[in-house]
Length: 355
Image (cartoon, rainbow, N blue to C red; front, side):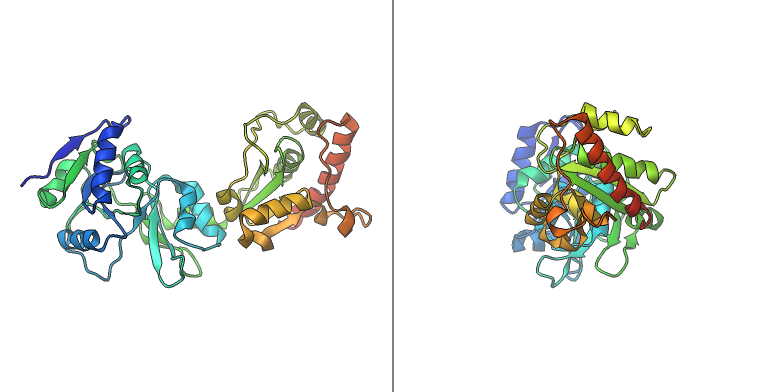
């Protein structure tokens, strides 16, 4: 019996068709589907019968585990408790995209490969499945991975429940696979992402400044440090806010105090703090003890990377336990913004000497 083929639009897939195929996966079936790299086979990772059937049709050895696909970057924490910034630097740089990361499992007793594909059909399918989706390439072991639905069905026609035809895979080769379970990231399979690419991303230091609205204090710190580090490619500097709900520009007073120092922050757009930002940062600098508490409530594992910015101040008066916060100048006089900037400037100038 031939496998039924469902054609979908590559950019605007019909969601009812995707939902139908996702239901098949949830019920233990196997579905061929497109990604940007090659065509894959979707199965419920936690369904032993589905996984055994998947191994059988692929002629795959039981010792070789299947990787899984996710539909959002943040879902990586559902499968691993690793806190190494290298994992999240790579995830943030290349997802969605052609990179599979191998990380320790959440229970610490093994490893798992995870990828977020850059393909709207596969992202919708994974999301609709509402289960952990195992997704090896749709070929028999030892044969080339298929780049079209027709290629996949040459070997697997009649052995899977349905095939989604979303047109040819854009990249046409398997994802790069990087092992992050050892001391250093190691590329196990090279695709469009190379070992050099991986090393460059991991080596870069990430500095994150945090305030409340990401329109005043953290903006001053971010743009000042960027200015002081101009010409260096080994450090990335960003800022975020614990209370950002709508993106906005920096306040006019903030832009003014920076402009007086020949720094242009007119293109700044506030961004909300998120888990990936925190986990990929090598150094997290907050304005107040409350911000530090909010960070640790969200991601306790980054405790050793979080500092109050004022801890870098040389001022013996301000650098005391009772006076470590940098007050929010919002709604206050222009002089309050200038005073805030001077305090931040002092700390950042000392910080840059340590980088």
